[in-house]
Length: 171
Image (cartoon, rainbow, N blue to C red; front, side):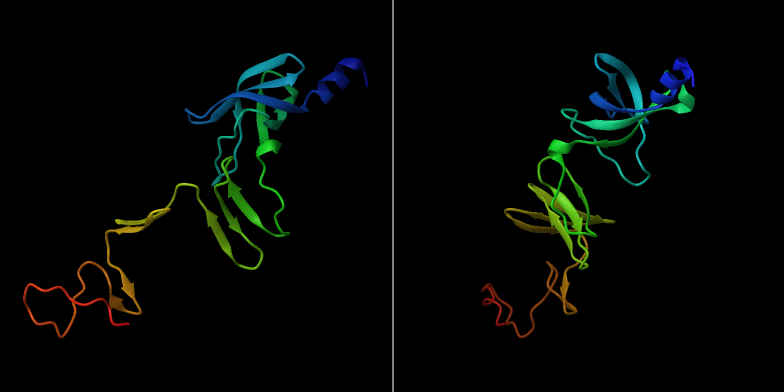
């Protein structure tokens, strides 16, 4: 193999260091250092369908592919940031996480574990369930426990109408 062909082949797949990640268009892009001091700007980051992230640029690494061996047609694959990685997972676990420790883990025993630093919001149609450090808020819909309405429209039986409040729940 001649030197020109060998150089082109070596340059088809390389490790890159990302800078200036932008997530404001149809595709996410970044500047990538493909060799020491050699940068390519606005290189598309390929993300798998159904999964999205905006990796912190500081320390982010990626596989860079020259499509068809063309150095002017680069794409970025498999972005990682080793300093922010969620590690020490049991074998078979799957997780989504961010650099602040928020995460959703699906553990091999069937447990789904959610940890949020600020709030957990679950919205279905017009119903929202929000958990914060202050408590739980449910907006919209109804709230039932064992088939009994415990929401803001529930009623108590055996109450004599008047201005007095009811006693605390008896069970």
